[in-house]
Image (cartoon, rainbow over all chains, first blue to last red; front, side, top):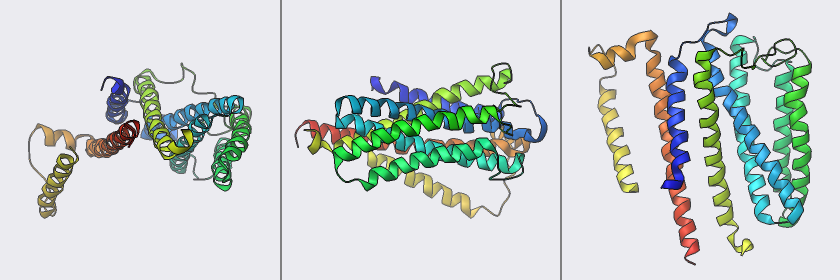
Amino acid sequence: MARHWWKALAILLLIYVIIAGFTVKIPIIGTNGQSSRGLFFHVPMWICMYTMYTISIIYSLLYLSKYDLKKDVIASSAAGVGTFFGVLGFATGTLWATYTWGGTLTDDPKQMCTAIAILIYMAYLVLRMSVHDLDKRARISAVFNIFAFALLIPLTYIIPRMVDSLHPGSATTPGFASKDTDGSMKTVLYPAFIGWTLLSVWIFSLVVRFRKLQLKNIFK
Amino acid sequence: MINRAFSFCLTLALLFISVLANAQQQNTEKGAVNEFFRSNDKIYVIVGVLVIIFLGIVLFLINLDRKIGKLEERDRNGL
């Protein structure tokens, strides 16, 4: 039981985030209204996605240095869970955009670039399914993963920062600086980051354990 | 353990049937809890809804974690 403490921490933090996320007093600014509370649920999805994709790229590199199939299992599981959270982040973002930007899928650079980035990772998952030889699959997808991560960062961090976008964190609306977020929101936002990330790690660990059991004959 | 969880869920489901029977009737009961849930345009009702959904997902994850753990143990014992 002692090694499950972080799962309990994730549950407690997220119950706090759900309750406080709706009840904490937030500044009402512009067209956002109460929808600013989406910050506690939409942004952590992306934090989870980046965490998973970072784990994925690290294990892909480790795979390519030692050709150990266990590393490939970890890399692909992380990419799968990361894409899951990316889709959740995208879906929540489009819903939010519908009522604040005036369109579900607009020509906003942040939204478009993110869609492309997620599609690249979906291509990674499809590529894996199309190669049946385990070693070949692991090598090809590990190399693809490096390119996918190399595109993820410019697509989601650099390009949206250079051009105008309605999304906070673009050239004209810097945002996300520590002084731009209200103090009362930070008391929920930071626990939300930790809680959701721990939850994603939990889901990821379950996927890895399942896949290792599935492939136990090959690992022995 | 799983049987106990199942019977708990069943009890909960049966409890809700009695709630459904009274669905046509507006809940006007007094009391601190009822007043709290009706305050602020009933937003706390939805907070409760989300907590219930989240706890459901968590119970599912804990159950899955246990099942995989049991499989791993069986695997370690060489079965």
